[in-house]
Amino acid sequence: MRKFPQVRLLPLGKNHGFTGGIVAGVARSQARNIALLNNDAVPEAGWLAALVDAIDKAPDDVISVGGKIVDMSGELIDFVGGVMTFDGHAFQNGFRYPIGSRGEPLSGDELFFACGGNMISRREPFLTLGGFDNDYFAYLEDVDFGWRSWLAGHRVLYEPRATVRHASSATSARLGEFERGVLFERNALQTVLKNYEDDLLRDVAGSIFYAYLHRLHHYVTMRNRGAAELKRAPLSLSAPLKNGFWSRVRKRLNRDRPLATIEDPLTAMQFRAFEWVVSNADKIAQKRSVVQRLRRRSDREIFDRFPLHLVPTYPGDESLMNSALFRLLRPPLPSVEKNLGDIMRT
Image 1 (cartoon, helix red, strand yellow):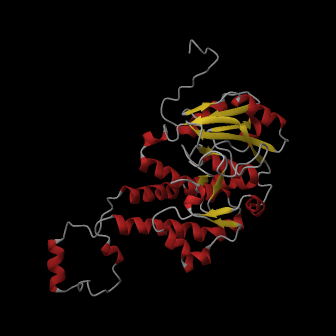
Image 2 (cartoon, one colour; image 1 turned 90 degrees about the vertical axis):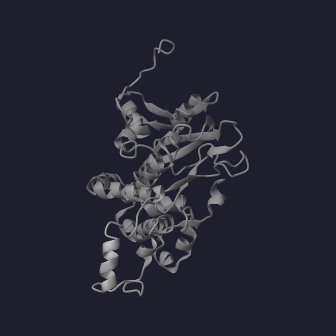
Image 3 (cartoon, one colour; image 1 turned 60 degrees about the vertical axis):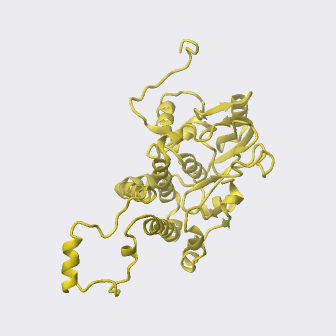
């Protein structure tokens, strides 16, 4: 602090996550614009000047400008725009592909969302839209804000001159894979439940929740002991007669033995994410009401610009998305089918 006396530190007492830090900082700012930079990112020369120049010259309907993010070597793509899936997950276009090997937006091109690790927003409209949702803690808060920006009649632009180098996951890896997974899953569900307009939410909810159940079923039955009992057909031959002699013997021998156990952390992750959504259902509905009152642009218009993606990502997703039932439930919106490798290096 002696070296940088103009810097203000805001001790929050406990870890409020990425969103909590942003909320606290913006609440105490009187600046015209707010610039966001990840703590594991290093800006290149001219970064801030490029962001400020881009937002100051942008039309009034532009709320945010997103910059370019590369890896620490400067040779690989981190963020040059992103896509959202039908169920609220998102991917960075060309992630970990060499710079120049993939199509990149030009200065002033539109983005569905700017990456929260390198962006600038006009403070007043940012606050009017509610800023980053503090219930996210981390992950997908920028996707949620991008969607809210577009539905409220704003736009988001890209500025490649504002480049930072990013040590991807240098901070978030400390949370642990499964803790991060809970945040990814619950935040994706929050995003779609808040932002789809009324008729579309009813149309798309079947595919969203069927996909979630399909993934949960895959984890439960493939990664946990005793899962065969969960797949046993009703009144199957392996089921003992309820009041028979051998039934009573087995009950005595297995009195304290569970029919099945959940011991896999990925399975628990899915349950924990959905538990959070169930426990906060009323709160999500209230936030949805606020978001929908801001609507000035239809989702169909938004997704004509930025088609939703169907991307097999989880174990079992190939069979899910190729199934006749999922095809029946598929969202009635502009959409693109891709493999994960089409979008990012895995």
